[in-house]
Image (cartoon, rainbow, N blue to C red; front, side, top):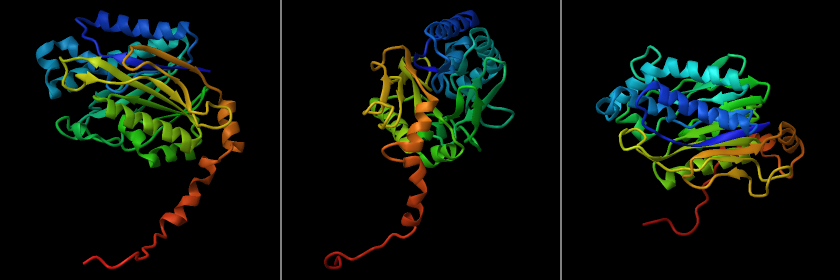
Length: 298
């Protein structure tokens, strides 16, 4: 299959037609380049807040509720685009109240047959805890698709290996990591996490970040990133683990061909077997010793 990861700019839209035209352009461009799986970033849906005007879009709470109010319409758009172009799409994540008092950070996944499901972010960043007051998701999801088993770890989640391990134990082949990071250090934390998860799980990880400046929104006003597709640095994959990576802060798609056979082969008979040998850690981390070295501190 061919996967496409977006380095995605947050744009202002005066009306729904502008937003819909942007999404159609992005999806059609990826499909025309042969992509089967398209990945949009975390909080890419914050663009929808611009539809209610600058005053509301400039407030944290107001913008969250404005995006949620447009979410059904946006989901219908992505579902239609997935069907029209015959692709699977991880849509840009969005605040979703879902009948609850506080919103989750939710990424919807769309299949070309019209089916859809979602993954909520599990672990909130400091900014998501305050001032956004987001709530955490309560479960991980495995998407069974003709492209293989797919899991999603939204941004900060990919920095926590036990979340990825749960998906690896469910035999996920591809991890999707949508992100939104303000600075270069944040981008590298997510990228390093994504590459580590590819190493540990002997899988492919697709990282899609936001990019550029959107001073009208306090949620994603500054964005730094470059899309990338990573695998284990082992047989069948590049020695660096980098299958493809974009130029920093250059909006557009990054493409890579991904083989499920290559993933299965490296898991079965790679130079190392990280996924298989994971459980060998468990008795060792439960048996930490503390030998005294040198004189006792005064």
